[in-house]
Image (cartoon, rainbow, N blue to C red; front, side):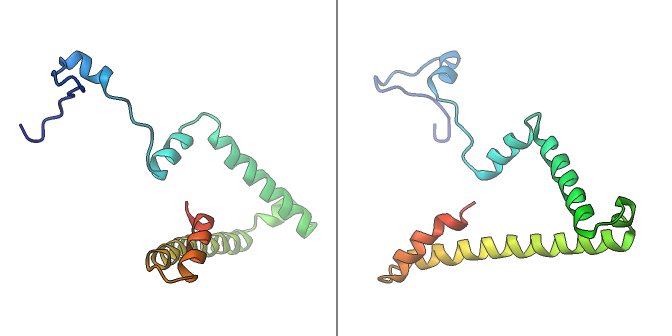
Length: 126
């Protein structure tokens, strides 16, 4: 029937259900989302975020040459969070926008332009 998932080997015989799962290869993650989800579930991934936070606070302390408590004042935190959000949005929109632009330019088959866009496309592919 149409839509049934039955593994039919090259010999043309239908395999029993127990052997179908063994006959079909397991699929590896195909999208970036699946790869990133698997990476995030690894045991040490949260350690990197903690390390980045410690490095950020250490750099803030060294840069301002002040006490750590002063660097954590609400006005400073608000400005830092605002900057992080703005920079993140700019990066996400910029990278995705360039990805779409380079993909479209590469698909247009314009001599020179398409080749240059195709060359630059891996730079913004996530």
